[in-house]
Amino acid sequence: MKEPKKALLSGVKPTGRPHIGNYFGAMKQFVDLLNTGKYDCYFFIADYHGLNLIQNANEMRENIIELAIDYMAIGLDPKKCVLFKQSDISAHTELAWIFDTITTMPYLMRAHAYKDAEAKDKEISVGTFNYPMLMAADILLYDTDVVPVGQDQKQHVEYARDTAQKFNRIFGETFRVPEPFILEDVKVVPGIDGRKMSKSYGNDINLFATDDEIQKAVMSIVTDSNSTGSAGIPTNVYAIHELIRDKNYLDKLYTEKQGRYKDLKDALVKDLQNFIRPLRDAREKIAKDRKKIIKILEKGAKQARKKADVTLEKAKKNIGVTLK
Image (cartoon, rainbow, N blue to C red; front, side):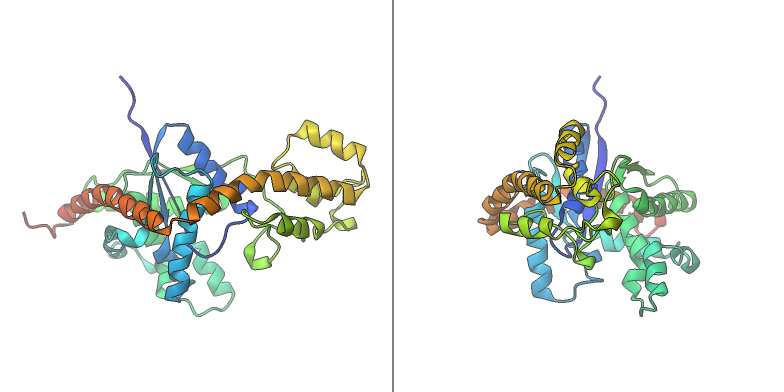
């Protein structure tokens, strides 16, 4: 008898265009996991989470569409997975409120996002403070078995696990307890200045960059003495290059062109252009039919809602608000 597939879920906030660090840090793994055929995959656009950062309607609408295009361009085929936006499923916010009633403030104050905001002396919104409960709802609504995350995001799944276990203790068995799927082999991708690649640092290489943009970015990669190996190998250049080329090829190339940084950057430019071009071409093709993108999200919402509403109704029955 064939084993049932496990449910896998992940979401991304629509807060800007992805760079190659996002791709190799998470997005590529989403595609790889989908293509194993082992999982029922749910990928959502976390627009309600994004509302903590974007409070402009036109920008939000545009970012949602752009992220949907990005998802499909990298290979998340909506025929093979459920692709939807969070705000289309009212069960997410309704379940988050139910979780609020069994969650203490000191527990939420341990969240990394809250601590980071507090450390920066920011005026913290309720949405930022409370986001772990919405995230727990995101995960638990779909009987999720695994959530692919980097080591630094493991706390997100821990909050969902704690919440499921606490709810089950109080109201009876209701939610499946998810497991984090730690992406062990993920490397920190350096930006063009040597720091971790990040949009906030302005040191990123866009995942769908034009050939000219790639040329400009690579030629700006820092190769000073602090970022250069003792053998005359520009480590920041090599670290990006090894994402798209195997070690044997690179060791031979970097040995032959040792100390010739311009030649090594030229090689990286060419390889990055060849890697990004098909992704960019796929994206441009998908972006031509925005009505189709909206229909795909609507179809995904129907599929997601069917599952989420069953879970929510079970929770509502167990807390006693369903009278039948």
